[in-house]
Length: 450
Ligand SMILES: Nc1ncnc2c1ncn2[C@@H]1O[C@H](COP(=O)(O)OP(=O)(O)OP(=O)(O)O)[C@@H](O)[C@H]1O
Image (cartoon, rainbow, N blue to C red):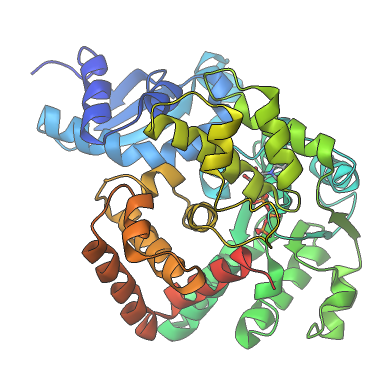
């Protein structure tokens, strides 16, 4: 049997083919991964040091691909572990710390794209950005809790993840944990439902032993009785022991009508920082930064067109740009102002009020499910893409006037019967599946906060 090392390039190519990876995904994430060792049936793979921020992303997304492919090719079961190149190069003494660093990164639940160096600072978010940096530099000391608030799609989540990455880079042994309030709620409900004391103890251990806890969209926890009670005690334990808490919400504490006084006072202990909608210059800068990963030159007029017409939500701004790119690729045309106008005609109506577009729905759903928008509109049948795709079908029907035929077209030329099936499937599923119902509710609020 040939060794894994000798077959390394073949293994990677097989993964590309079998899992239908685009050239961009393959070149960005897989091509640079090198074989390091096999010991006790564990294959260790080297990640280049300049991708340190992507360790947890690569592990989450590609570990199983490598495991299945290598096991099948070698006809022997292997486990997979990833290690950063720089950790291997360093001397023996410091190696003792490194495995912990890897584990901490994997557990932190951070999106590799959301870092300080990919965050554009403008007058709208300057204060929140400085406060986040201050907290990242001295967790537990500068401001505790840090409470970030602002409208939908303005960068709260991006800043939270940036703080997490920064802290882990500076303090590899710190335990950082990012969760959405939806994840937190589901875990609390699950451990209560199990009726098992050990499950509750495990949950408490998970949340009360971290050094940095980041909870996104905390407004969704407020009012949910047992979840908010669990959150309250977690908050107290962490705060009392000087651990850093970072929260985000759509409103400042004083404007949250149903917020009890005990929460309000705690949220106000540290620093409250708001993020406002971006001004024109910041919108242009974000669009240009976003376009850096696109291989072709884009005329400034296109950026101006988007930045002039989409003002209040950065998720929409990015979605509009992605839509123009997709439109030009699908129709095999260059990007001109006419093409941009055509591509965005369902988003930008010159004189009509803004409507909710299917592409915006796809964007929000993909973010909430943690998958790429292009996978939702692809033909891939992997289970992780099927459910979000059906949720898009369901929301397009219930939140827009788009016909079954058009939803089918938008979702990669699917037949209208597939769309009807998807819509029915979700309609039935949410009658019994609380978790999915909750998730869809949050997505709805993100799509249409009013
Ligand atoms: N200042 C910025 N620079 C670069 N990208 C940004 C900036 N602000 C937001 N974005 C991008 O906009 C998108 C939406 O941002 P994010 O998810 O952080 O918003 P949010 O405020 O958490 O929204 P929600 O309340 O709906 O969850 C993300 O892709 C994020 O990377």
